[in-house]
Amino acid sequence: MTPEEWTAVRLSLLIATTATLFSLPVGIAIAWLLARGQFWGKSVLDTLVHLPLIMPPVVTGYLLLLSFGRRGPIGSFLAEEFGIVFSFRWTGAALACAVMGFPLMVRAIRLSIEAVDQRLEAAAGTLGAHPLWVFATITLPLCLPGIIAGAILAFAKSMGEFGATITFVSNIPGETQTLPSLIYALTQVPGGDAAAMRLTLVSIAISMLALLGSELLAKRIGARRRIA
Image 1 (cartoon, rainbow, N blue to C red):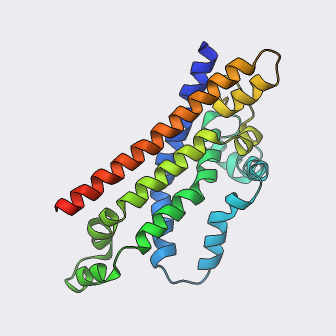
Image 2 (cartoon, rainbow, N blue to C red; image 1 turned 90 degrees about the vertical axis):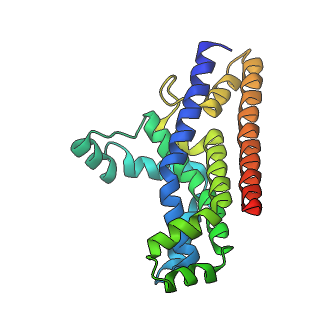
């Protein structure tokens, strides 16, 4: 592999990991709200969370550009007040990947939380436990496999994200050029098919390793519970 290809691989891993880690706490909170909460606008929140799944990725990227670009309301505020810039930076690619993978993460975690027996949570509450303590000691451990599955799904989605990323942050080598972007660029030049195939196999291998790791971790957690 060439230095350019290694750079794209490392950048993709960095972006996918950053997107997953930063969106995970928010994903858990939103999943809990959708699974346990009863409030006005719940259906609206559910729709907004899943909207990136049904919209074209290019539309999502364009909306991010309008909102978080240097001239956007959020982007200009963050740039002027905190010096944080998303457009045409790898951080913007991480933001785009987080948005695109967020629905998959929330859905997996929500289903796992809904599978937890609420009688266990109610019993802890009647004994005087604070709701946050109940969530941390009962709900969270029981839905851990779902959290892992959601995180892996978001990571895999981030590794393969193309439309929203290239629309929001373009395809800048060494800064925003991820594996999918480089593969696309290689398919547009003569003689780039071999390198594109090589990177395609690398992308498949990384995704398969992530999924296998998720399965093994979920099985270990299940085995520990049975022993306990």
